[in-house]
Amino acid sequence: MNDSQIMTLAISIVIPISLLIYSNSRVTDTRNSINSRIDDLRTSLNGKIDKVDSSLNARIDKLEKSFDSRVADLKEIVRAEIKVSESNVLNQITTQFNELKELIKAHETEMHRK
Image (cartoon, rainbow, N blue to C red):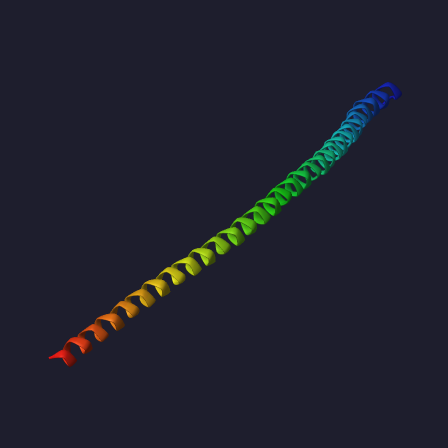
């Protein structure tokens, strides 16, 4: 083999290998760039999710406080209604008892007259 054939053979081997190495480094660079972008996106999304989570927790806390307040108000209203009802029932029982006592006295008086 003469020098020109060796040179041709060397060039035909060296050029594809260099292109392959260059291409591989470009693929690695692209992969690193994509990974970096994915990490940035993940960080951004996590921040947004945390904000939404905080906002929802604040709304839920506000609703819980409002609900607790309304339940407490309703308890007081029910207690007041029960007291009024108990008072009305007690007054009705007392009135009926007094009427019954008067009827018994009237009946006893009528029985004594006979």
